[in-house]
Amino acid sequence: MAATVGSALYWWARTKGEQNAIIVAGEALTYRELQDWSGRIARTIVERGIEPGDRVGVLGPNSLTWPVVALGVLKAGAVLVPLNPRFKPAELRKVADDAGVTMVIAPEEFAATVEEARGLGDTFDTLMFTDVVPLREGGRDDFRIDIAPEDPTALLFTSGSTGLSKGVICTNRTLLNIVFEATLTEEGFRPGSTSLLVLPLVFTPGLVWGLVMTTVLGGTLIIEKELDPGRAAKILGEHNVQALFGVPLIFEAISRSREFENADLSSLRTAIVGGAAVAPALLQRWADKGVALRQIYGMTEAGGVATATLVAESFDHPDTCGSGSIFSEVKVIREDGTDAAPGEEGEILLRGPGVTPGYWNDAESTASALRDGWLYSGDLGTLDEDGRVKFVDRLKDLIITGGINISPVEIERVISEIPGVEEVAVIAASDERFGETPAAIVTVKDGVDAAAIVEHCDRLVADYKVPRYVVIRDEPLPRLPSGKLSKTAIRFEYRDVSERFDKVR
Image (cartoon, rainbow, N blue to C red; front, side, top):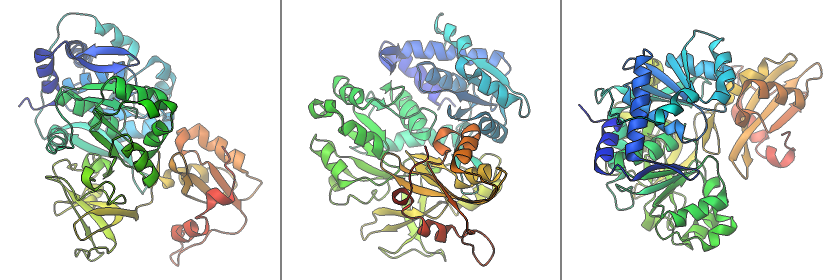
C-alpha cells in the first residue's frame, strides 16, 4: 500500500514539480529536485545493504541536505532515527544502541564524533553528507520502497523520568493521521501552505510538523539554520507564511525584534506555541499584529500536539490548551482511575489517531504508558466545565528547557561519577529565556567545586544539559523514610534557586 510520505512526495513531484518544496538560507529545492535527490539517496542506502526496517540515524543541524537525507531514508523503507547534533559521543552511542542503528549519515564536521561513538560499542556503517551531496545532480529518479501502514517509519527519542532514553515509534499510519487531523479545522494546516521552521529538524516539531506535514500537503517549508528573530519576522511577511510553531521563547524573541513592528503578518493563520507557560503580554503583542497564538498541550508520544486552544478562546482562556481535537480526546483522572471533577487535579490522559503504538523494544514502558486505549501522560492537570485542559505540573521528573526534555536522572548519574561527590539532585530552575534550566544541588568532600562539576558535565553531555546553577552544600540532602532522596523537599527548598544563586555558566 502506497500510503507513505514517499508516495506523497512522488505525487507532488509529478503534479507541481516546479514549486519550491524546501528553502534553506535562500537556497531552494523544487519538488522535482527533492524527489530525484532523495530517490538517489534512497537507492544508495539500499545498495549499501540497508533493508526495510533497518534503523538509520541522521545527524546534524538544520541544513538543505538534512531533510533530503531524511526523506531518502524513509523512501528506502528504513526507519529514520533523528540524532541530536548536540550529543556527545557517549549520548550518541546510547541512542544508537537503543535503536539498533545499522547506519549513521552525518555532515563531515561530525566525523570525529561519529567515529568515537562507533568505538564505544558495536560498529555501524557510516555515510557522510559529502557522499550524498553529489547525488543532487543526475536524471529523474522515482526510487522508493513502500512499507505497510503499521510498520515503524521513525523513532523519536525522548528522555524519560528514569533517565533511560525511549524510542517513540511513529508508523506510516500515525504520521499520516497527524497530518489528516491537522487539516480538518479552519484553524489548521492547508495543502500548499508555507511554514517557517526555526526549530531543529531532529525533534518532533521540526520533523513531524515541519518536514512531514509540508511534504504530505505539498507546501513549502522555509528552514532557518538558527533563530534570528529579526530575519524571522521579515520572512513571515515576505514569504506570506501561513504557519509558525515553537516554544514561547521563539515567539518572544521575534516579537521583541525591530523588524516585528513593521512586519506584515496578515498571511499567518496557524501560530501554535507550547512547551512552557505563555505570558498574557506575549499573547497581546501578537494579537496586536492580528495573530492569535494558540497554546498547545502534547508530547512526542501523541505526535507533538494533542490539543490546542481555539482562536476564539485564546484570550478568554489564556491558561488552557483547548479540549482535544476532532479525533483526539483528553481527560483527567484521579489516582484510583476515576474521572476527576471539573477543576480537580489529576493525571492527564490522551487518546487519538496520532498516539504512538509504543516504545521501541521496551514492552514494560509501553505497558505502563498505554493502558485501555489511553496514553498516560505522567502530567498533572485539570479540566474545566467545558472540557478545556490546563497543565499544572509534571508528575514525572523532567526539565523542559526551550521545549527540549532533559532527564535529571541522566545528569545526576554523570555528576555522581566525579570523585568526591557524595549526593546530587538535579532540579529545574526558572529561566527567563528557556523557561527552565538544570540546577544541581550537590554535597561534596575533598574540595570538589562548581567549576569541576561543570567541566565534567561539559565533556559528557550536550551543552543544554550542563547545569547553569550548581549549589554546593555541606549537610545531607533531604530523604524519604524509604531512604530515597526527597525531590519534593529539595525542589521546595530551592524553589528560588535562580534568585538566590548566581549562574555558573
